Length: 596
Figure 1 (tube, rainbow, N blue to C red):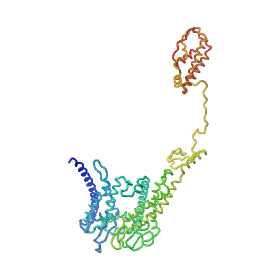
Figure 2: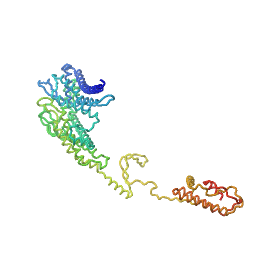
Figure 3: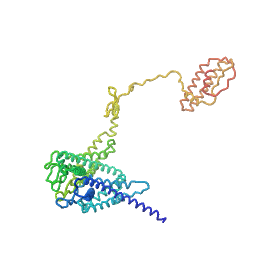
């Protein structure tokens, strides 16, 4: 028991982590189903004369929830009695289950203290498995009702949507890395993804393609909004004709809002050129609206263009793919040639063109996926094909983007690199300095003073000769040195005596000298002072480095000069032995000068 205890504990912990991940997937499915069921039941309760009971309302909610995952429904209560497929998925309704699965997978991998985290592959499998278990139970419950799901559509694309959302959640929790690839991938792919350049190029391709798809969607939404405004009267009539009570109109409004992303994709496909199918015998394109479709009465369908040849108003929808291509080029050049980067750091023409072309491929793939999700059948026979054709929309997006984005990216790159090279810039600056003027570029925000004296900020660059500073042209004025010996600073005096010998170099004259001392004695003392000064100069030369020593020697020479001037003087004191010598220092030198 002691040896197996840790193993059993580890197995128990692993099982608890797996059960928690499985439960999170099931909870996400329950939240989505509960939200749709509450909405449907509220609409059923608010209806003044419901045609069915609460059981049918719950079955309808289950069918709508399955439809949100891409499953194709079979409607049995038709006017003819023949089952009719319903495969147009409201994309706004699909956003709810996708977000719930994404969040569940992301939360499973969030680290918590004292809790283990499963692997990435295990998280995807467990979360998707728990979600699909609830989905299978709902499909069994809806079987036999007026809105049941086609079994094959539950496998594809419903399972693919759930697994993709879970994988996106795991990728988000892992920090959105660009690798490593799976172990079964080729060796060349592993080597390429290990390079930092590959990561930068892949990031640029992903960002540019995503931006292009976003602009396509935005442009398609603008086209759809313009069509609704252009056909406002028939849209209003269709909305009022569908239901006479406010509960019914609110339900129609909710359904129209859920189909707004579909209308945006349809508008993008219309601007790309292939347009969209309105059944098996009718197609709407900017060039022409062919056929006579039998459409159901719905506000969004009332905004379709008029039948016949297209007009310049219809052709204006081609601005949507043009804007998408320019966006792809702009996002690529932002990485290929940064605005404030050096010329050497820019990508080559080949790298820029290849990256833009790959981004165009990604944009085409995104357009194809959205077109496939936004269309589907709305009935049998004539209405079996409804919406844009996915492969035509994807191919058109690829052609538009590659044909316009690649040359636009190369032109933008050349425009950003139009400045001088560093060598040219240095040469220009040298020429300007030689000519006597220097170009000055004022930075945005520099204060400029107007004539009135009010200071304001200039935001544009200004070039011109730099103003001369006051006094810059004046010649330097030489100040004459005063005559006479330089008065040494206090620091110089003390530093000078540090180099003097420690032995006494002059005799200190006492205050009381014997009377009768003659001038030759004073002269002898002066000669002794001269000899001591010579010794101090030798000491300064031996020390050989300090200006302070030179200053000390200068003071010694001044002492000698003073002694020489005092040579004719005689003392009245009597002759006698000289006073004992004291230590050398500034005070002693001063006293010697006084006595002299």
